[in-house]
Length: 130
Image (cartoon, rainbow, N blue to C red; front, side, top):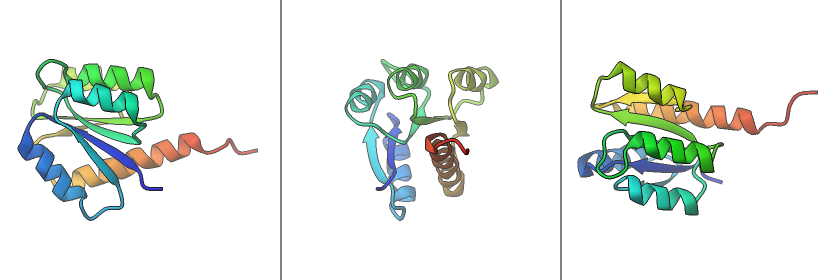
């Protein structure tokens, strides 16, 4: 079964860029163009990895992260932002974000972070060794 990825960003150029980068993967990619839409999708669908912009109108990325960790604790969240704020990155880590992706990013950066997040999720799902 393909890994389910949710891209959450209110900037159309970022959404299109992510879709283009992920087009040649086996991932099942979905998009939410804001935090409110993301919350609805998260409640309806279990995603393996979410790539979430931190600055969005109405509901920001940290609120989406909190919701994911409360309702879908096995999902991994990568916070993505154009802001270079150490405090925001630390807050995201405190909320158990898997990683922090600064904008603009290279295709290899997002692909590598998603692969690492999926590997972490798989390790958590494995039964403990005897």
